[in-house]
Image (cartoon, rainbow, N blue to C red):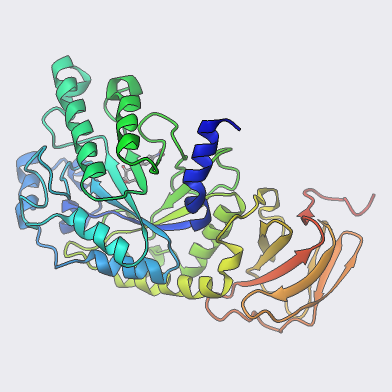
Length: 410
Ligand code: JFZ
């Protein structure tokens, strides 16, 4: 391992162990209640959209409510949109007066957010959209050299402020590097050097057209993602920015746990979004689903947090559940409870102890060749939060399950 790799490992350590964070999409668009792309999708003329900057009046310190919920839900970090594609800056910037301090809100919303994260012991992430629909050079920069110069200077200056004025920033989450086609045109290498000079421990995602520290598969959780650190980001109700949705469109508590299992097994993180309303309130549906996730994690977090071992070759191997793994301990997440006996085939390795993770209650078991049978289980799933019971298997060496059919026939 060379020095750069060692540095990366050290910087990423907390993040790998943290596993789950809260994404927050919040901006002028929340007032229209049709998602964060509404300006573009409905081709709202700029002068009409700009009026939203003065009509936006969020209630005092809503970020405390987000952070409190994130904490309750077992999340360890947050990432908030400091500027989405609409171009409105949520912090007090000198680069444009299209910002929260100068307009309707009358204060620095990024500062409130950072303070709330710190109050609740959460790591701080900044989302920053490179694409900008409001800046006069935001599109022109692709065709005109002077315009590009101005826009790149603006972009770098915004990031300099964000990395200078808010104390320690843990994550920089770039988005959509349009319309400039290459990292050379954005001067991304220089930009990220500056960011790291100001924030030596920061973790940077891969959306400035450079790979940097982690990948960002979106809208799906794939166990076999990237061959390096990755974080799947997901909406919880079919929209990033606030948009009311029928209850069926919201991920359930079980959906979240299923995604969390897949991410954990694949060695990745999960960044789950909420879109607060214009005044900053968290939609009731989000609270209803996320609080139980946190309660479940209080009892079963051991199967999620920490230095998990990649167990992605096991994904979906059983119809009763799936696995995560931490060294010599394997966790079977049973989502379809089979009753008093649970049989797991093609399992290799010697189990020394089996128990229900949530309560520690020991479970009787028998291993014959590659078959593991757990016995004397409760008749129905003991997990009353989400019907998702984790069985902990402490093993002599690392357990694994063979893929494919017919292996027991020889
Ligand atoms: C972007 C934004 O356009 C969207 O509003 C939201 O902020 C999301 C987190 O990021 O959307 C993307 C970005 C990248 C891909 C897809 C949608 N992608 O790489 O497939």
